[in-house]
Image (cartoon, rainbow over all chains, first blue to last red; front, side):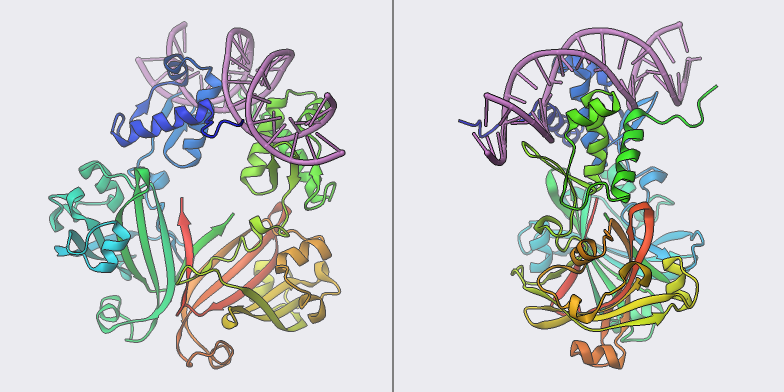
Length: 240
Length: 240
DNA sequence: TAGTGGTCTAGACCACTCA
DNA sequence: GAGTGGTCTAGACCACTAG
């Protein structure tokens, strides 16, 4: 008679740690307790705690630093600053990426947006429009839809903040940390509006990147539609 | 005085196992020795062997099966049959994917192909052209360049073999196993030839997917240029 | 020097597969 | 029941960081 709900100790510990992250027990960038202390707290051996943390580090939830401790992952960190941006310049030159938001308004969720964000049609969503410039040239036009309840007070002024990535801002100012995302890519013809923004002829082929981003518990909190101009850049993907 | 070449035991074991895979000590699908036997052979504890194997399993080099053993990963396996094909149908319906190769000829490497495959310009490469059909409809047009030395005897007849994926054929018939790959995506306008093959108007936006595939030792052995029709399908990518 | 993560051991026992 | 991978322990020692 096999136990249908068997769960190894290290997984229970992992689940507990994840729940602690969800409720904000430790914030992004904070150190979590040492392996030894966690082992004592849970009355298990250090190896069991290690296995739980190993998995969470592999999932980019935690970051280990030898000699210092284990820390909650954060987007405000060069290591994962543009972790989700796969666009690369043709010439390997290091490009200066700048986000240029120009619109931020409250809207009613369309059926499409409501569906992916798990909302009702008509629920309030924030829509942010922005250009991403590489070395000054506009390369990406993003329309970003956010669950309005979670981002109360977001405004154009806040968005223009500075050098930080959007996700860095979200986690520090709104306590919403993006954990993972799924992108759907297609090739489309540029509509007049987007063509104008990106400085390409109407009808030019553009890379359409639709992204759903999830926070803890696989809860979708952002959906964005990006149009990438791939004349001098490409979307890079490593297949494991 | 820190040791500049310090390498933990488990990594040395991992390197040894990888080298064994490279030289064909065990072929795709074969079982490797049990953890206990490897531990004895290397005079280490089982835990050390486990850590080496853990990493290799995470890299899709090995597959663990509880109660049975550890096996060399193979493309001839539903789990990783189309591991590298990210195209998904709009409606979640399960699609029947068929490869329809129609050309296979020896060519001289162009500068571009020579560069990515690490060859000299003019070296012999095999060029395979094929259509990928989803439920009968042509969706992908691939031009596949292979290092000719490694695929001696490859012909259209062999390619038309059957239900297996290309990579499955490559590993079983030529001993070349694809380990990982890197793809570069762009949106382009359909040229007349490709448009005809895919049944779309000339100039239609198509998703250009350029892939370099690597075998053991990060050696590039295949480069392909695929044109994906993304009217009813999309390229799906999970961001960790 | 104290504290942290990283490696390694020897052995126990559990869960799964198959003959 | 024999053999395999999966979990867990208690403890040792190493490597790294920082005050």
